[in-house]
Length: 392
Ligand code: KG4
Ligand code: ZN
Image (cartoon, protein in one colour):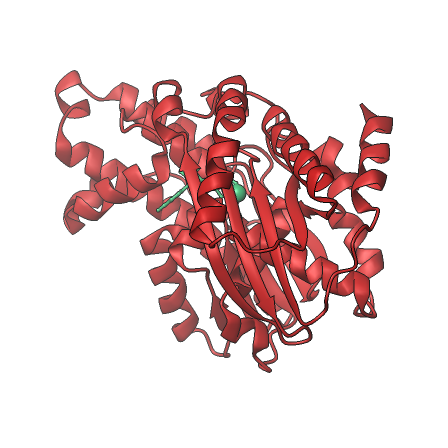
């Protein structure tokens, strides 16, 4: 597979039509997991771009994967193949058929068969329209989702260094961001991702997929004093590193659940209490480690991204905690529709890369970007195909 990726990346990176600097339309495709997404972004100005999302279509496969309690890659691939032409049509119609200047596509990390479906679709589209393709890294896109909001992209506010927490179904990473395109991974999960943990716990409790929103709904119903009836571990919370581990938490839920009588397992109170405690355990670890990293690196900003950052309690408790610490940190979190997978974040990321390719790269981008080079990291970062389906 290796050499193919390299020749593919060279082909994709070959510049074709000359694109105007001050105005452009980017069509972006995202199929790294189970959502088929296409967005069309208009950008005006270049150094301080003003973005408008002309369309942002997400075709969810949740119903198809629900019975598996996680994403089934071959089914997801088949659905992407079916959905992509339809989603493209809807995205173009909604955006009133603009003249597209660039195509962007997520090339990793993600589920291999799903990614390839998007990449091949993008290649065909670009070939037919004689356009260039910008390959996009999914994790970076989750971070830059925070800059879809034009005020942030144009703001003069000093944001860097920033600590980014990317929490999704496939990833949990703490990343030091010294500027746009300058990243260093400080730590990551050693086993399950935070979103995967939500999904697996929901499966144990019979709450369905995706688990995050289901657990959050149950947790919100739990009465305050009931929560203390269940106690779960906060894995690695006191370890002085930036890594995470969530698989033990899921196992603790499994043991707790198995130790209960049939009657209790089915009781609303128990499900609500254990959901609240599991959610709180994940939140406690995420907040503690992120704030510690922010202090250690004298960060000016904390940036959240990924599906789990849509969690209301996580957003609320982060905000609250940041008010109680003794120095000021800016807190960025995308609006909810840009937390979970979408192609608008891919389009914005492609814009920044296109811009760096045209203009002088910010100092240090090239070296650090190796970490994030979508093609370089593609092979090694593909998630094991059935990772989300295993409970043990
Ligand atoms: O970023 P995303 O859409 O896809 C990946 O890149 O994996 O994240 C999906 C994950 C799922 O595990 C889902 O359960 C979780 O994000 N998620 C949530 C919430 N909404 C989605 N987790 C906790 N609370 C939520 N409100
Ligand atoms: Zn994602």
